[in-house]
Picture 1 (cartoon, rainbow, N blue to C red):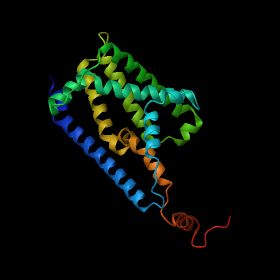
Picture 2: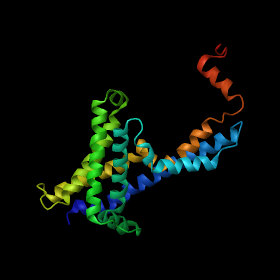
Picture 3: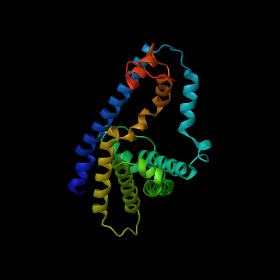
Picture 4: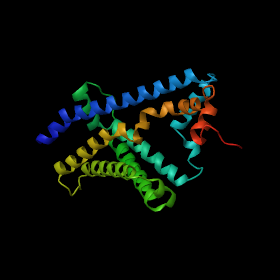
Length: 234
């Protein structure tokens, strides 16, 4: 095994995993604490927790919403999420690396299924990239980080898929180095980019609901902040 691969599967992997885990735990703690403070200071603390939970679960698999506005974009986004979650978490090679470093492991999914889902993920990433490049509204809202994340994901999926082909024209070691470096960069960026929603998603609906339960005099304070002490006549 090349030295770089030994380092990537050992010390480098542990470093990236540590940054990723601590970064995400920090976000969960800060978000949860902000929600707790908002509930404590709210004028109305009655929250529809059951409805919030149902809405959160329904958005985990939004199959009944894919046909609505921007159906193509929604389908591409769903394909991307399915590809990332299933392939990254249930590929045997990934599980073996995690097990070697942490002792944690779970069942893997067979390679033909993961190959198909990898192609689904490549389709989703490519479609989202084209949307951001050629659809005016998406292009206006897109920032450098949006393109960077999609390119990193595309690099990871394409290199991983090619590495598993007997007809791969690129030297295996070089391709795996490219695959590994892109994966590490992406993992390091996750706690600091919008991909952090992978752990914050369960809190989004609750946070949104709490945001509408203003503390006493919150409305008046908002008006003063936006329009000065004299307020604004309506």
